[in-house]
Length: 418
Ligand SMILES: *[C@@H]1O[C@H](CO)[C@@H](O)[C@H](O)[C@H]1NC(C)=O
Ligand SMILES: *[C@@H]1O[C@H](CO)[C@@H](O)[C@H](O)[C@H]1NC(C)=O
Ligand SMILES: *[C@@H]1O[C@H](CO)[C@@H](O)[C@H](O)[C@H]1NC(C)=O
Image (cartoon, rainbow, N blue to C red):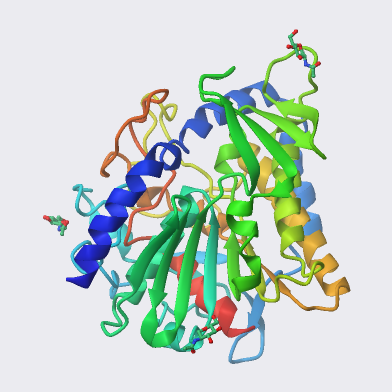
């Protein structure tokens, strides 16, 4: 009963933001465009350099029983005959964009895989243990529709604890709260697709996907005003940066991304994403004394269209994960991933210099997810097309239950070590 209540409220409330939330794939057209324009330049030379300079240092590792170090973000997908741990029938909080079971995804084999890191195990989330650990705490997800996808996955995984019925509320159209009274545990989700303050100035714009003003040094108050109340926050954003934008710093226009204006410098999407990520992490650095918890940056989630473009014939129809090494992060995804890793490294160092009042962790889901082209909704989801977009297949978001549940396995593992 209570969960049905959540379902109807969730559905209704999300209507108002569905136009924003679901056009993430629009980014992909620009992405392809930008990738095409970028042909021979530095985008494609980044991978090797960053592999060398960044990856040998484990951002997050744990000890196995044998005392070896384990990198939980490196591994392979292996069968999990016990999955799924919830269904569309047991979790009423699944947003219709991700409800692939209900919308008839034909092969449900994609739910029966778990992430096996090298040299250690990543247990599936134990919801009782998770809630015990979160007693009296507050956890926030900040970002775009993938942050919402992540939050929905967590809420669903916790439905196994039948005694822990959350009470949902919507302090604003961009702020959703689930409160677990028995545990005094709060899960918040903030809609902040650019992390920083932004406004749409043209619905059409040079790529017919809208044009935004981004204030790159101003963390969006939608979430930044609340940081003092967070114990844990997972920040993620990348998809929206593919769209054309005018870039401001200190209130002054400094350039743009794909505005196609002869008198404005194109600073690239990488610059915009880098500066916005920097601003968001600065708000969580502890320097101003407001935030005192653990901040996590979750890395880019590549879209996975095959056989065409996102708005044409492109689709994701695989029925098995790739094996490790069959698919690598490259091109435009690397353009986003590398600055995220660099900004995280710098922010972690800065936070340590502040005396370690906050903890910074990287949730580097990129390599695991690039192997899961089988776990997207494709056309098996509820969706209302938006004015400027013809989205045939969704190869950006993740079906629930499914591969994205692993992000919460990782979350518990990371939280357990703080
Ligand atoms: C769940 O999905 C099945 C198909 O897998 C469908 O028949 C059923 O109606 C769905 N239930 C709900 C509550 O959406
Ligand atoms: C619930 O947790 C908050 C911190 O998130 C704390 O300030 C408050 O006192 C707690 N309330 C109870 C009833 O334990
Ligand atoms: C660039 O040129 C356009 C059109 O001529 C003009 O409207 C705009 O103010 C100029 N912008 C800047 C930053 O100079």
